[in-house]
Length: 67
Length: 288
Image 1 (cartoon, helix red, strand yellow):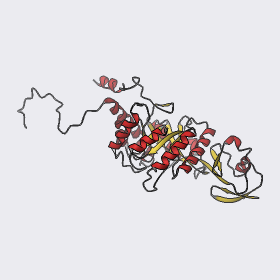
Image 2: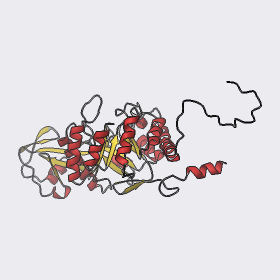
Image 3: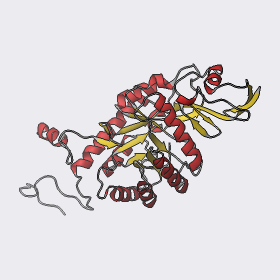
Image 4: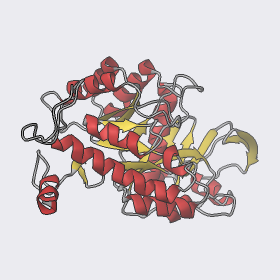
């Protein structure tokens, strides 16, 4: 297992997961999300190649009402 | 008589008769009302407010993972896909965070194939109480995002020099606040706003300048449009009105009334009266 921080919360996740696999495991399958790893935006078409590493800090965001 | 008034008012002084559109980044809008999607009591009220207002562009915020509201529903299911979504960077207090937020908004909108994907309503705040922008960070973020290929619509203060610097940095539109966000104080500093309009539109009359924030009711919107703004962006004034859908309709007419008045060339103000009825042939003795 590796340590990752997702939206400010530390959690354990399996080693060797791609971003797609991690998002699937979190139930985040919507098209309306964007992911940043260590403050770098991860374009959608790269999600299946990007591997989540120990210590990664992820931000997973979506759209909400706002002005 | 009625007909001639109608004819006159449907013919704008500028542009094609009967057509009154404006353009942001090559995209043409018939509606000059941009609405925010925050603070509504329900998605249903929001959706109906958008419909009644006949808006073509709505702002939206980027936040951590809360895809669903408390009942498990997605806001996007309540937004007509024909509307341009304008993602904002609300809540960002430095250029770096605002740039990250803009990139995340763009990434989401690209996935949705929304035409507003490269657009951002750039907010870089300087103070949580007034929610006024930090002009230094705002300018920095604008420069970065323009380089990154964004169409940057800048929420700005009413400072004419800041407005000019933002336009010079490549902002697609400068959007000065009429008054603090959500305050309902209306258009406070007409003089500065008129200087901004004059300056940014000098030699570039189609450059879009939009009033963003502060309006409380339809007359505030009309005032902004009478000054010559291309559009009004508002959220709280509709979303928190006692009857939001009705207020959305009022705002639609406020924008139209103000725009028509602007195009009609208002009379100059005068300290004294000017009689509307003929002064000759009066049957009574003139009184002083």
